[in-house]
Length: 399
Figure (cartoon, rainbow, N blue to C red):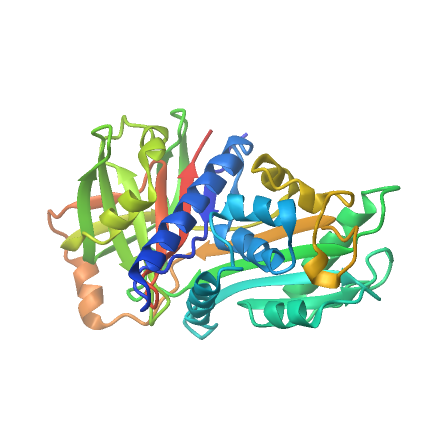
């Protein structure tokens, strides 16, 4: 039986170039990158040989929201995991500005970062907490009868929200005999962009992809010859890494692909040396080059129950009705999170703007130029230009 590539997508949210306190900006950028790398290592360790996509921004967003309602040890556990707290007014103001710069959905791109907090109907909520949540990214509080397992217990505004709501109810149902949920979290991150310079569907063909353990598969691979930003770098262990930038249309961002130069060097030898500062240095030090580019085509969507991940990071009180201290949400004791669900989706395909005649001639005019061929495990990052931020990173591999 054939195997599919292991795709790990990490949507990051950084803020390198926003105005404001430079130390705060740089500090939060590094903290969020390290958070993303830690999330990646945690999830990848338990998903051997399977496809998945997960968003650090989609995980950190609900934790930030819960900080508005947490006190005592519960609040400290959230702060320790994130590395910061939105109770700090400077941090709160800065992150609020970052979320405000995220591009909206348009004809060129579909980008959605959102979090819904489903609260048991009849629960009295603090007006201050309600105000803070409603103004935080694309977040909302939704009253729901989480104990009602049939029918539409959880209201939803669109198809995607309805699907996650149904899955949320299924998780509640599987709790058999446990106390009914007082609060359930559903976070979503979706990205689908349009290339500034399209890949022609007629140039896509089945090409060999060498997996992590040597297995060779034939996978749909896109191709284009174009002017790109490219650089060759060396990690702390001396491994050579090629980094390529492919821009999306409009203000959506750019894709950065990281590929070991030596085909005999596994991606697993590069990953331990990746840090927030190294990623920033590499992606900001590229130069223009004309190259032949080959990139696998893929589309992937996943759902995670975050409780086990968060528990392993020391966020335990949040899910325990006897220990959770979320008094700022409702002023009540025993208010806790019963489920934390995360959905993420990304698509990389040939779609793009209509090509000009000059572009078509470029593709037909073959010459001996450098080749960037993602025919073995690689990583990619997506940078959002308004903040100068990395908003996504992916890994393709076979186990």
